[in-house]
Image 1 (cartoon, rainbow, N blue to C red):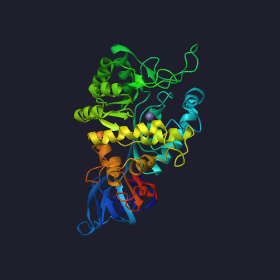
Image 2 (image 1 turned 90 degrees about the horizontal axis):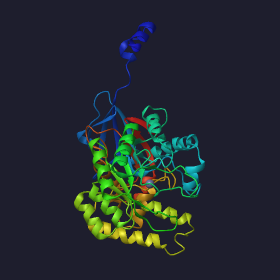
Image 3 (image 1 turned 180 degrees about the vertical axis):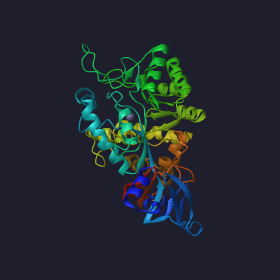
Image 4 (image 1 turned 90 degrees about the vertical axis):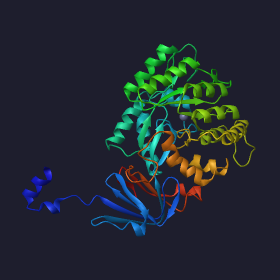
Length: 419
Ligand SMILES: [Zn+2]
């Protein structure tokens, strides 16, 4: 309507006032479609969707299409971060306790806007954000600000406040005070059902439960919620079309979460072959977050490369060996926020360099496999009809995982956000 009025006022013809052609042909050196590398392929984008993909010879630019040359670059689906907290910043800057207790929500949101931009510029066009960690429902507004184009950032799947059993989480500094907690406390069938529904009503895409945690400051993690509580949480969330993800690192916490039917288990540091086999049988994925433990160990003084690995990492090595042996499906995410946002690729590098995964498996993991596990059927691969969330990196990440650090170009929802 406005265009027509303007055309009439200025005397320009309607044809000249039309927007530029919506078709864009991308010509990289190779296309990784989420599964396989295809040298010499091109991709045709129509507005915010992928229209076609194939060998350059079979896919000439249609009339009116623009062409973008991406020489020397590999085009791949926008990466999917499986585990982040945009409302946290690295613990060597400020401890988790201090972030929860002394930083205002306004300060935390201001930081989060920067975190969101850095994450997108690092090639991560979708992020599972697994808990606001004391910042209430700030992730709901953050997601809205991104979706409304107010700030740049990835597409978010948010867990809002997350759920913990009363007394199990933190901060725990003074028994005389009721300190604000890093997550919402809920107990018993009625309490859990109510809290799950409340969080969904406020905007949660995902329900996150802490199935185990250390009850005291210097003790190992132990189970928190009962089997009955976890099962009910999953049933309540599932009825509303939301998956449940569980933080768990003990065999018993992982077992209960698996039997309850969660979508993924986060961390799983103390997992055994038996538990991973149970997860595999039940179709529950493990998101091992190896980068978090690596970062925290260094914050505690471990000099990587100069000192032997601390006990915690030796145990992680053992449990990852069991996980890989069991065939449990892996989800890929680093628990970003523990370390710097935008440095998400750290998880990918560690999985290749220290845990023996192939670069191809990890690149598939952060694209098509994460999409499949998180049930995001509109992304994670380069196929006609899927969202035009695409990135270009220099080099071949299926051979050299460090290529994922060389993100030269990012498109989200058909719009170029980095070039
Ligand atoms: Zn986390």
